[in-house]
Image 1 (tube, rainbow, N blue to C red):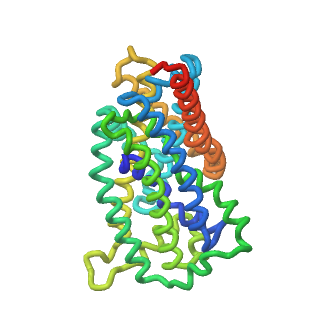
Image 2 (cartoon, one colour):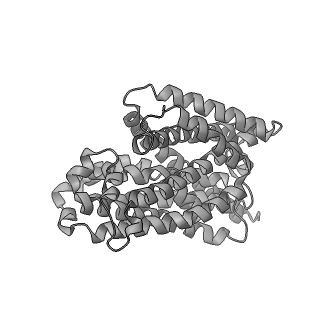
Image 3 (cartoon, helix red, strand yellow):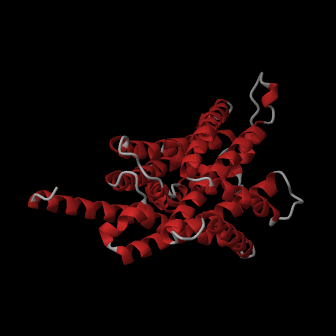
Length: 359
């Protein structure tokens, strides 16, 4: 569960989090990150509470008992749309980063054309295999990311992240909460992963602590990037993190002279894993709605639709800003409001059963 959440939430956002936070909240962005991490940590706890209440089942299996069958279809269709939008955006952004950083002469459409069949194959193999994949890649991803950013801190300047807190900047700290909501999407992915009855008591705490860990990891990324290149460069460059890492060369370790290649290789592996997890959740939801359809046919159709949507949005100017503004509301609804409502309904129904003696 820890690795599923970490790899999904951070898969793309580690590249842009420094710029998104610094351009609004400045050196006090760590405060905004902690606030959003706490809020979304509560949301993930609601998700896992609901899942653990119905051990071995995913959202569509039990939600008809809570809000009725028509409401269940509406809710699952909403999550299908939500995960689809995230997939389209993540794959498109991964393609652009690959072209800008490594293959400037390669047409943009070729990256998703090659990547989507691989994502679909991984998703087709099922929830258990994807979960194991997150454990393997996640371990390397966290270790490498932490090591690289610690090296950046040792070569940076502490005065660049000062002041850590400025009372006059409180409005900006609050303003930064909006773009950060996208950086913590989507903990609701766990609705697609059934929880074993043996782990249900620990799952809620694990989910909350996992989101807090992600918040601390984001703070490490933001602070080390600012210390390395300064806040002005962070704001002015879209992929400032990549630039900061390229300027980092650990002394005495010549084989790490191109630290950016190591970091980006692991980072793209993490992004690959995160996209695969989201696609798996999307596939599981659609398979529940169409139980008679073959899983292979569904994933092929999903892949074709996702690729078509990527081609469409690639021709839209400034769509990235629109997507991030929209996802503030979508992420809040899917990861906090909906899980919170289901959590309250279960609590109320449980109390009624206790009062009437119906156990």
